[in-house]
Length: 365
Length: 264
Image (cartoon, rainbow over the protein chains, first blue to last red):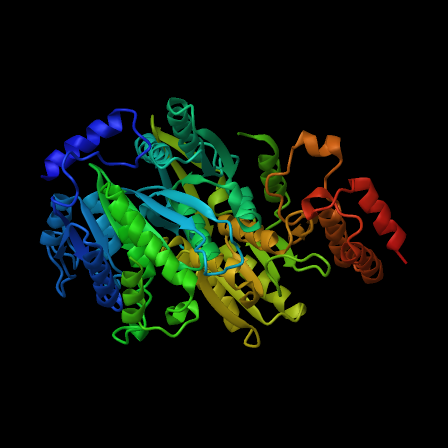
């Protein structure tokens, strides 16, 4: 099943596509094939919001069968982290997953959970669609952009050393291969989602060779997509433009560090991490959607958590699977519920519980 | 992109050892923005960090860039920041970092900041990760007072803070060293080298005028500095003469004439 899906996806990607996003027109109606997806509920508020997602999917009759995996309490020697080998194999097999917030255990002798997922599944691009939620007013009303961040190298290579006492060097690595890969994904995403402009964010005036290489790769890919406008923006200029007029941007593609900062800045523009969906793309078409907020241990178990981020991430997962009608229905239900304002969780200024909010969304379906 | 204006800036800073870059971002009366109560001073380490210019190609297609952090420079900038806060009656200094990922490099920066903080018990000190910082800047900027940062983050934070408080056309700044000080526009973001702005005379002189008032203060001419600053602020408040970036249509010369007219 998975290999069939992969083959079809590859054919789709190679044939210059229809305006439909990634993934293939399926010969069977989506209602009959159940897709298996891995679910990591996570810690803290994770299980509650994962339950919301399951409930909404059930009500919307989404053909997804969840395979739940939890973080273990012992380090698995095969993965050197608290995530078991079985969990990772499950994602590799199903090719799609949803992850709730995971609290990184403190201590040595194991890799961080996010790092494990990223390295083992080769998740090379982090995609965050940021759009203003109608009905939830922030200072910015017209945000509608996607940030695509290279996720494997750059400044986060973790290669640091102390030269002599009091002098530390940290290496930033940029390779042609990784830059081409993320640029290809960015342009492909722009094309399949009907986006018109891709902006590469850089600081190549100072970091001439590293960001220069990144830009060169972006330019090469841009030539293959002449219908998409390509521009390059220096990062300080980008920050300034984002806070003054975020409507200027469409799709942003960036190396690791800048991507981290800009994607969080954009999340701040629309209302914070509690409302921002995110999706990690890996080699071979793996997609792991995740909620990027923390596990909020202080409100765990109190039915106060806001499931919006995880729900919107699950919507982007559905789009990746080409289940657009379901994705649109669920997204509209979420946006309408928030816009109506009657049922809002505490972080949005309301008093509803998680279950009430979820029920309101189900009613809107 | 290569060589050009920005490398000249770096050269100036390195040769004259202008180790601290100050950007003063605050709301101006009469210039409404989306954010209120912004009064942030960004103090950015200006000589090392990611802008060391040490890059090389390892093999074709793989490039390395060195980010260098030294205790000497980190301590120096932390001392400057706290001393600035102390002398200007500021209440809080926030260190911006990414030490959860760059443990040794930003860790060293933080260590230096913490050491200096212990010597100024009257000033509150806290630390914030750079991505969270940017998020907080666009939602709750009033929580920040003085911010001390390494080179790259300082560039981004200064431009973001300038953007939320009114734009790079109005924020003053300066580069300060032990022996020399060079004042310039606080955040320059992208308008450098634009021929069109010169032709159409839409460049905003406010930032440079306010920076020169900072220079006058530095030279111990407070009365002149005050006069210039008040004149500029009055012109902004009245709102009659504004360049394009502030939503008006005056030329550079018209704004300058208005400032001169307001000088008392």
